[in-house]
Length: 75
Image (cartoon, rainbow, N blue to C red; front, side, top):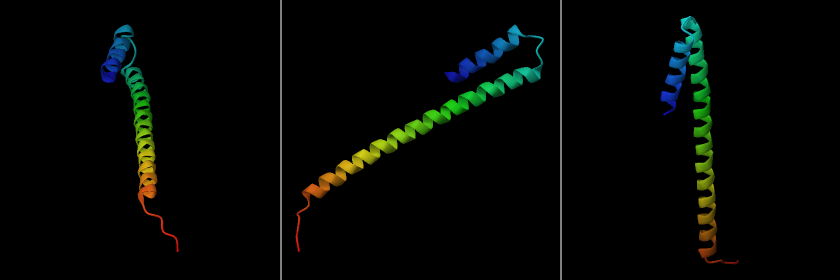
């Protein structure tokens, strides 16, 4: 979906600025791609942090349940 938006943006630039150099269009494309890559990386990083956080809390709950289920011995 984002790729289609990016393609429209670059094509729109080329249509609106037909006298612009190919270098300018390539620079625009590069800048937009870098923005989207950075956004994608942030989304992936946040998703990984969320998943790790969930796993951490679920693991802590399991450990606390196991600790209460174990018999307590005193020496």
